[in-house]
Image (cartoon, rainbow, N blue to C red; front, side, top):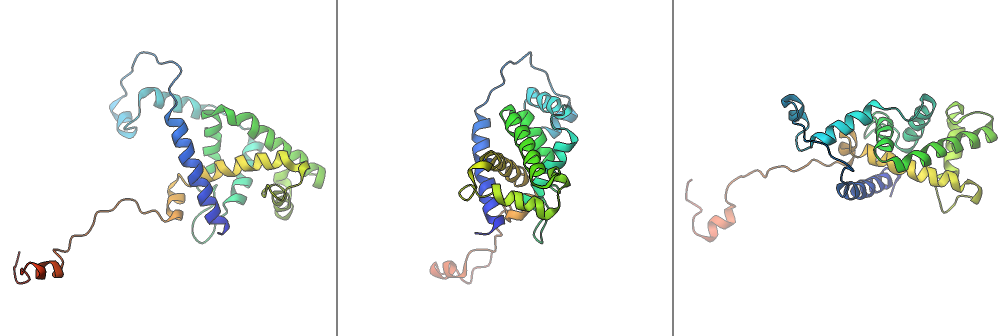
Length: 212
């Protein structure tokens, strides 16, 4: 299994788990029901007004600063780079997805921010610069240390834990976009093309000369 196939498997597993967990969640409080404007309801079919309002509120907030977002973008594109099959993670707006998801699921906030800080400190101690300022070769050398849990040294375990989360979020974000779906090769449901009763069936019932 190559890198892209591994990411696909990871992404689909993460997606299915997230869907199950999120489907069980209910809003903590619910105020009087508000009827959505017709134009908004048309683009948000199947969603309740509290969901629409909550998403708008989350999108209006900012969690990661510019440096953190730049680091997330570099990491996401290392995990899923552009190739001859599809665009990169940043092409699919995965960094924006991660920004949203940590606000939607606050349990991600501290591990993500702490992991980004760990990455910069580790890179600075090793190369004298932050991760995004390091060369591509230097960045990959660090990723190689934390991307393979079974091979990682004990002293980089914090980085391994962070990168596992980052990789999972990247895969989940990428494979829920149009670019990611095309990368998988999923065409969706399609109607069968009816070409008539098969010739052998018509012959079986002595109807091969019947014209419909």
